[in-house]
Length: 439
Image 1 (cartoon, rainbow, N blue to C red):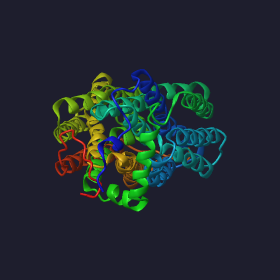
Image 2 (image 1 turned 30 degrees about the vertical axis):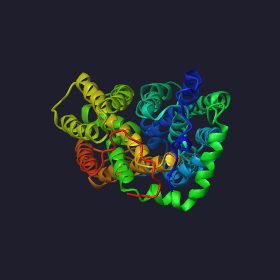
Image 3 (image 1 turned 120 degrees about the horizontal axis):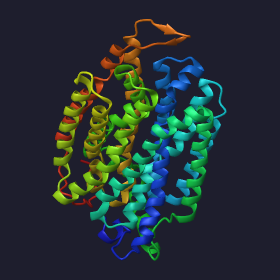
């Protein structure tokens, strides 16, 4: 089946630019909110370990419930977003997130807290894909890498909020009240989405109907086969997942505790250092998208990003007694350079039929989200494996050596990411339209 150019994308240069930005940035607020959800246990983890008397592995498992539901629903999220109203899906997803978060504030057991995280994670499965689906409709193809970078930047701003600001809020009002504040923010964002997000540009209803007919003709299972059997998608997904470890491992759960134990920082100081990962990614994501578009290459900047990330991580682990300022600069650079992961999304979009944009990009999202529970639980398991038996008030106490050994999984991951990038096929920023091939 050959997809005709006029039906493969709704976006045109003639679309009202201001409205396009309002629609896509309003949808991007959903991704911003989900990154608060994804990463808030980094600031609240120590409170939960004390509250529930749980081990490092158990905390990793509790955090993982958010990502288990994320992964489960990502399997169908792309297919749903390619076929149904993006606006309605975002609103339903936001309700799930806000409800799960509000309920967590009143939970008094690990089981109920895990269920709350699972409920919130259901909605999170749709945050990035919905933003990319709308961007592909409201903006022309040659601006997709930049738009992807800006959308990721919004997410990283959510990650920043989940660090020092949330840590300070939890210290001031308690972890339960701070979680309620997060739920309230989600309610406000839901109103913004309801007010401003539209499925496609005005006057494009006929093109939208034609696109839906092509999807119907292609069929559910063939669409899934094209996206999920494309080796390019999985190599890009592996690269993204591994280059995202500074966010998924350090930013989301273990960064603060690692810095407090290994470098003797206070909780607020550690949160400030960890926050620099997100600050770096805020700057780096749109820049990485822009530089890739400017160069006309996808694979080359991804290779460079993996190599420099590996070198930076070696410095972070092995520089003796770095100052807080040195750590902040290194974490900032790490966030900046690992932003090359955003190039995976336009790479995948260009390697698949445009009517399957959300479905194909979901492969990358599945890989990225899978990295959260796998890396978090692996880190905790390594900590427990090397634990020397020290206890304090019924809670395990982990040594500096435990943290230093566990953190070595990151340079190993960056090396694997480099290998994955070597297997990618260069797209030269050009879109593929043949839907029959799955290589």
